[in-house]
Amino acid sequence: MKNLKSSFVVQIIITMIIMVLIGGGIYYVVEYRYSEPSTVMEGFSNNLIPTKKNIEVDTKQVVDSGSNTSLTKIYKDSKYFFTVNYPNTWIASKGEESDMGGFHYTHFGVSNIYEKPFVWIRVYPRQTSLDNFLRYYKGLSGIWSDTVVDGIPAKKLNNINQDNQGIILIAFVKDGYGYDIASTAFGQYGSVANEMALTFKFASSTNTTSDE
Image 1 (tube, rainbow, N blue to C red):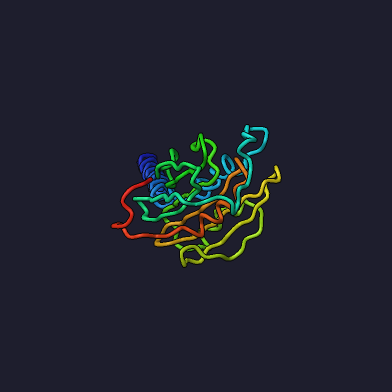
Image 2 (image 1 turned 90 degrees about the vertical axis):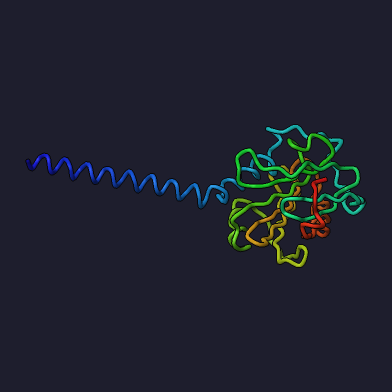
């Protein structure tokens, strides 16, 4: 009889442990799936700061046109209601969700912009403050400075990657979403990313109706 009671107690304890583990797993997925630092940093390690060993950069496109670039095209994001100017010789992708989940993105460049963008804009949900958002970039070295995007306090990172390429990243938070505008290692376009950030504006849903 004692053995039966002991076995029953053990079964109850095991069941409770399993329920706690399942509940914890569900909570993790719901609360953190779309705001994990790894989701952000995977994008940077794979796209923003690749090495010469794992990419082939078209040297004809690796030039920094800087202030000589005319930002006459306007990209309008119909989901997050913002606009940004970009170079008139570039193209922009439609605003899309990442395959892994976790962020909304738009790539800018000349060709093959999905694999080798020159500049990107990403939007991350569940970001409550700029300080919390910035901790996702702690794996990046460089100097952070204060800046402003459309009247919103922002931080700008000047980073030199291991191939001595200058990279600009500008991060800010609005209404629970984290935004970053960044140049990539697929060309020297840090100054263009900086100029694009100066044109970034949030718009009402009536003024921003389509991605283009």
